[in-house]
Image 1 (cartoon, chains in turn cyan, blue, brown, green):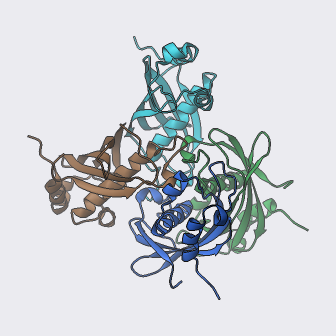
Image 2 (cartoon, rainbow over the protein chains, first blue to last red):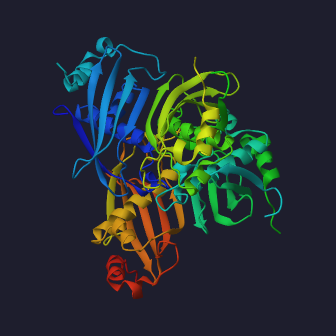
Length: 143
Length: 143
Length: 143
Length: 143
């Protein structure tokens, strides 16, 4: 991944580890959420503001592939990027790496819809083109 | 604790353990919540129904004393009882024990208010005396 | 899914919900873990006993597709079944449904390896054939 | 609280909220853990390094008083300070506030022991006086 990729750094908490003394696998799904929240914030419009303005972004699916375990107090970087953008949905890719040496801990994806508060789909491109444009600027083109 | 004490059994999950290979201390606060939810259900009125009828029971304070650690897959019993009941608040006591041999893992307390959806206090005894009576029946008298 | 499918029932906790007033999507990954733990226990050998005997079953990957949201205090059933079994790994499929009316909340998968305590792969079929047989009995054949 | 008080800033995550659209009360106990981890790191010796050198700091008790709820995406500051230090244990006080306007969300305490890996108490002052001194420098004297 080269550009238009957002990096969020965080430190593994004790409560995120499990009895194997590694990060519990479910927490990577939470790391992904934190990373896309910060990526959206970097677009100039926070997810909290989106909800206030009536746009919700529920999760349609997630996946995660575990490579090497992250451990307590390790500084990790969650890289994320928008890979596909449709009029009412989009897809994100993630990589979780050790911040210092780049060791790959996990890769993943998530798919999201644009909906109203009642989780009814909305065509963001038509309804709120200025927000749709923000997502488009963040889109990674693969030629 | 002898009578009017409610027991909720549960099994420790892997995701509730930490790198010490014991239950993370924050999870006992969650066990307390599960136990009081089941205690309230046993009164004949679930907490979910209370919220629907406009009564919320936010947590005002919690405390927990850790005795011996609980471990993965252990069956534990969370005992809870109402120790004080005022017109607009109440207090609960908890004990977390190994179900099979009674080993004490933790003791704790929580204080709660009765409020409306906006977290504004309500005098349950006046507003909903039939629900107040349910709590009173569960109260443990200490003479 | 017809037979050799294990059902685990659980009630949605308040701490498993989020500000959308639905189960936070990351918690389905935890529901899957609980369900496969109970499925393995039903084979006659608990996961805790496996770890004690030197066999670890780390998660290699997970995926989850969200259909309709589950809510607070709802009773849900997590169905799981082994779909593939290799000499050193296996795959599980999941369905999360409302216990009473069968509404589908989510489907998912997970892949696991058999390893020693240091997460080094072991060929379970050779090393511990009696445990491998337990998994095989649980395998769903698709013809 | 004036000096020798350590501040840790964090942003409330979506997965830390509950169906009341506020931070779930159990998560303040986790915020406390993060805050004391950063306070200990600021002493020049991380908790991870302490564990590696054979010193564990289990939680003996916690308490939390909830004042006003924190909400999703809010930036909060967790202030913590060492209030008591004995040869084999210590106590910490916490305040959770909105970073921008100082609104008080919660106050709390925790007590900890110094132990070895098997949770057997050790007299830190005798066994590792240089680490004990670090804690003492951080102690807030109340005259």
